[in-house]
Amino acid sequence: MNLSPGHPWTQHILGEYQQAVKLGFSGIHLDQYGFAKESRASDGSLVDLAQCFPALINDATALVRQVRPDAGVIFNCVNNWPVQAVANTDQEAVYIEVWPPHNRYRDLVELIRHGQELSRGKQVILAAYLGLLKEPQDRQAIAGTLLMSAAIAACGGFHLLIGEQRGILTEGYYVRHATMGTALYQALRRHYDFVTRYQDLLADPALEDLSTSHIGGINEEFQLAGAEHSSMALPGTVWTILRRRPGQVILHLINLLGLTDTLWNAPQPQPAPTALALLLPRVPQVQSASAASPEQPRLVPLAPEPAGRHLRVLLPELQLWTMVLIETDT
Image 1 (spheres, rainbow, N blue to C red):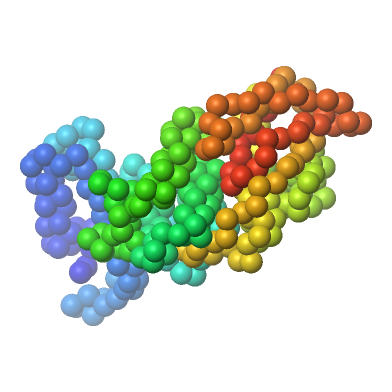
Image 2 (tube, rainbow, N blue to C red; image 1 turned 120 degrees about the vertical axis):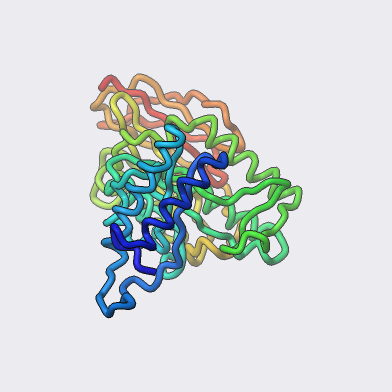
């Protein structure tokens, strides 16, 4: 289909979008297959769809808002294509359907961060289907699901996953979904309650990522003791995600200890609980520190004590995901 601006087919489909909103829909989801990216029109001319989509999105938004001012449009960047062209268009959020080779937790983080940067602060939604749940929902399937949920939320992303009647998506054809068993439902409910409770600390576009500049490697501003750790989501480590906004630093600890890989669409062993200590910088001045987790959702005050050039706090035992909130004077 030739979706070039002004083409008769483009005008037809835009008119259909407008009619749909007149019928009562609250917005339009523009879907695609992700291919063909370039093709020949019937007259032999080359059509580069990445160049067609921005105008299609903007025109669709303008037309549906003529009918309903609060109507929205979202476009599906299949496997992140063509996010560079469409991220900053008049769409409500950056929506990415995730497929190989984006196979690891680190890939999810990079998709979220890249989408946030390109869109200048739009929220990023990942449609990442959990095929692992087509199999029996044992402890390893639950652990894999929760680790993926933590990875997306800790970086400020959102996940298209849950449906009504305990449905959970396992592939792009939504009819073939799975139904959550009691154990998975209860565990994932705790995660989603936690994400909802701390949405402001997780999804604020103003948060600056300091994960590779302030903790781990040669960085000494924040130090973690008690287990191997890395900001690169390496198996067998505690994954550190550090973000900051004025007056607050938020450190996320995701437990990858015992994992031999970081595939997000695969069962994973239940990480072993571990005791950790955190060293905080004295500048800026720490006003308070507290920690929470899906298992312990209320913020628990921590007691910093002097430790040379740092302040030292003992953290609650890390189960799977802990969030540490540090309030500072700047």
